[in-house]
Image 1 (spheres, rainbow, N blue to C red):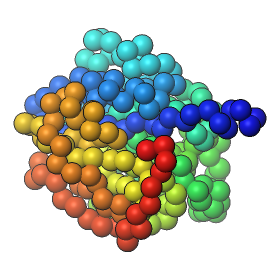
Image 2: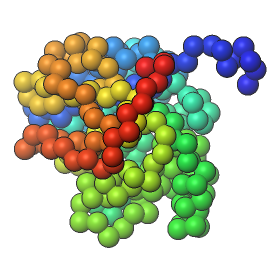
Image 3: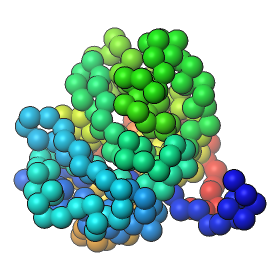
Length: 258
């Protein structure tokens, strides 16, 4: 990378998630991503939970180019998460678009990630040691991002009663800047790094809850801002509401671009 390229302003990825039974969660996510388009223009994707499982639609391009009425109608359910990407690790390819799907001992998980892990190499070595595969193999599905490393860790983590416990076990292993929005077949999850480098906010809509990178995404879908997700905090969102759990000690720091 040249000096001039390093001096160019850098955007960050945008993440969005909604838990809203009975609502058109894909359409809500579309509007949320549209408001976050300035954070990433390379690719866009939405994952939604249907009674047959979790389905993802993603492609290269802007939100308005990737989605239309026809493909949004295929994304039905009570939960949806979305992502707009600006590549900071991994090539700008379809395989590296998000949300990414992964398998766990509790079923399927979809993950949308904004940030950069600083210990990706060490985590990749752990994946190789535990699985005998690298991220060019089956676990990474051809992807080369730190999100793919996390997805592989979820696949390898065993012995937990719920996916929540699996996530709670993995989060302390992640170093660097990250905001995560995840979903399985029944719940939505959100987590933020210990330093709070990457933003993440919680909002309330009539039928449920929204998490997003910026409050602009809450405004466009008519959600009321509740609060920031705290550094080192994990949220679990389902039919019983929002439950908070601290997975790491807060060590708040700032990011000049955020």
